[in-house]
Image 1 (cartoon, rainbow, N blue to C red):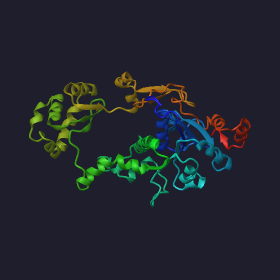
Image 2: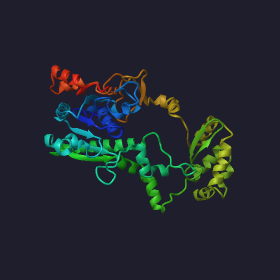
Image 3: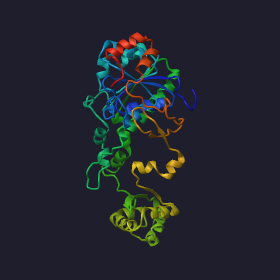
Length: 395
C-alpha cells in the first residue's frame, strides 16, 4: 500500500454493466486494486456494441475498464457459475449491476456470496433502486435526467427540457459509488464482516440536481432568475460565457466592454436592478460583444479580471494551450483501436503509461485464460471451457 496505489492487494470482482458502477471499478483499479471484469459470452458488456469488432473497445468501454482485466463467462451454465465462485474466493469487493432480482436468480445474491466470503463488500447498482414500484424498470442516464427534474431545470429558453449528453448522472453516480466503497474499505479494517452497499442512478441524479431542487423548494417552486449578464454571448467569430458577481464584478465588466458609465446607471448598479432589467442588460451586452472577435474579449476580460471562458468544443478543449501546458491528458494505445486515445489524469493517482495494465482497457474476455489459470484451472480444463463457449473471448 502506498499513496501511488492505496488499494494495492485488494481484489475486486466486477459484474457491473454500463458505465456508472464500471467507472467506479475503474477508479479502484487506477488506485491499485486488482479488478476482474466479468463479461458475458457473445459480445461482452453492452457498451461494446458499437465497437469496430465484437467485444472491442468504445468510448464507454475504455472509460469503464481502464486498468481492469476481463474474463468472459457463460453464467447460465453450471461451469461458468463455478468459475465465478472461484473468483469470489478471497475477493474484497463484489460489484453487480443487473436489474433487481436477476443476480439472485443467477445464484449470487448478497446472502449467498457473503455466506462463502463473510468479509466481502457487496455493491448492488441499479437504475431506480432495489425496491419500490419502479425498481424493475430499465434505466439509463437520460431516463434519470428526466425523472429527477434535471432536464426540466436545464430547459431551453423556449421551455423545452434538455438532455445533457455527457452522461452526468452516470459519472456522478460512479463517484458516489467509489466514495462509498472507499469508505467501506477503510471501515472494514476494524470490522469482522463485510457489508451490503446499495446505489442507484436515481441516488446520483438526485444529488446532481440538489442545488436546482433546493432553489425551487426554497423559492416556492420557481428558482430565482439568473443574475445578468451571467450568460453565453455570441462574439464576432464564436461564443463566450461570462460570469459577473456583485457590484465590483459588474464595474469590471463594464470597464472591459468600454462602457464604464453603465456601472453606476441606476437601472443596473445592483444585482436586483440588473435582474429587474435583465432583458435590457442582455440586449446591451449582446450587441456590444457581437462587434468584436473572441480573442479581443478574452484579452479585455483577462485584463479586467472578469470571469469568462471561450465556449469550446471537446476537441477545442483538448488542444487548448493551457491544457497542453498542464499535461492534463495522456494519449494511451488501446486494443482494437488504431490511434491512441486521450485520457485525463486522475487527481492523486500516478499517470498511466501506454501499454501498461493501468493504461489499458482490455477487449472482452482478453484475460480469460490467465485468470482461470490463476484460480486453479489446468490447461486442459481451460481448453475444454473455451471449446464449449463457457469461457474465453467474448466475440
